[in-house]
Every structure is written in structure tokens, then in C-alpha cells.
Image (cartoon, rainbow, N blue to C red; front, side):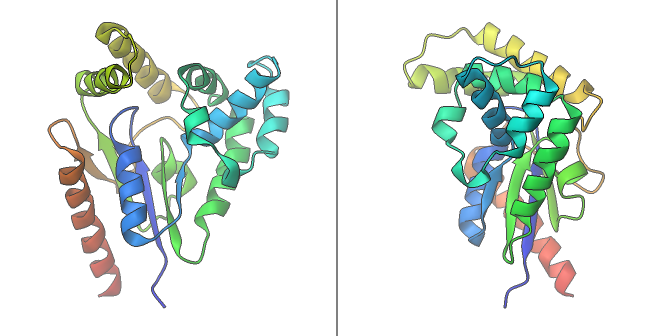
Length: 215
């Protein structure tokens, strides 16, 4: 039987970590979890019934009932859900509940690929491989802009850049589980990489780590 493989992928918004995580999960036949969707699911549940986003007790109650198998990426990807989720993500009690659910997801016999902002540092500090995927704020804003235009949206590049910079600051400055690379994470800067190049770079890191473990 093949040994389980757990891959932790962290990084800021629009760095390409989600696309890379899905590619790696498909390549290795592993379950994948975008942990950001768990926070979005809590936010969306509160928005749906008009409940306040600043009530931690309510958010904890909702988080306790979130089913990780029922996360709908399309619904949860809405911009307003993302904005609401950023308010939920700073709540320590909510984070603790969702982290336990995320760890449970990763405990499958095969292993798993998890991506987010605190996977290598908090959720899976013992992961077999840790990747920190990043890119300049300008490149990430350009990606978001082009995605929105391609989808028929009317957006402004400067607004997207400002939004990404605000999000980076919020994620990196929060007291509970701030965004930062784990000490033993491998950095992949995708500023000048397409997904294929990032995928090859990640595979090289993973294959090397697995080889060292088996030696």
C-alpha cells in the first residue's frame, strides 16, 4: 500500500495556490480541500438568513454544523461572500472549530491536499510537503482583472489591486494564525510562471521530499 501523502499549500489571494492544489490532487489521486471555502460557507450561511457577521457566538454555532462534503465552490466564490468571510476568519473560536474539521478531512488513509493561509503553520504542521505559493500584488491583481473581464464583468484594475493589498494586510496582520510561510515550506513564486511551470516546480519538490522520506 502506498504511504499517505499530505500536502499543505499556503499563499495570498490569487497567487495560483488553488489551481495548483487541484492539479496536484488530481495527479496523486488525493482528496482536496480549499480551506478558504470553509470560512466562506460560514459567512454565506449567515448572509442567507440576514444574521450579523460580527456575532462570534452565532458564527461558532454555524461553523459547528458546516459539512465539508457539501461545499459549493461556485456559490461560495461570490465577491460578497469573500468579503464577509474575511470578517469571519479573524474569529479565533470559529477558526478552532474549522481547523479541527480540516484536520479530520486530511486524516484520510490516502492523505490529502489542503490549500489556504495557515495550513503549513497551524492546520497541518506535520505535513509531508509544505508549499508557499506567492506572486507580486500587481501580478495577482492582473490575473483577477483578466478573469473578471473574460467572464463578462466590468471591473477596474486599480480597485482590484487595492482590494488585494487590503486583504494581504488583513491576512498577515491578524493575531490568530496570520498568513506566513512555515519555516520548512518551499517557496514557489508564480509571478513569471504559468500553471504548468508551477506544477512542474511543485512536483519536483514533492518527489524530492518523498524520495528523502523513503531513503
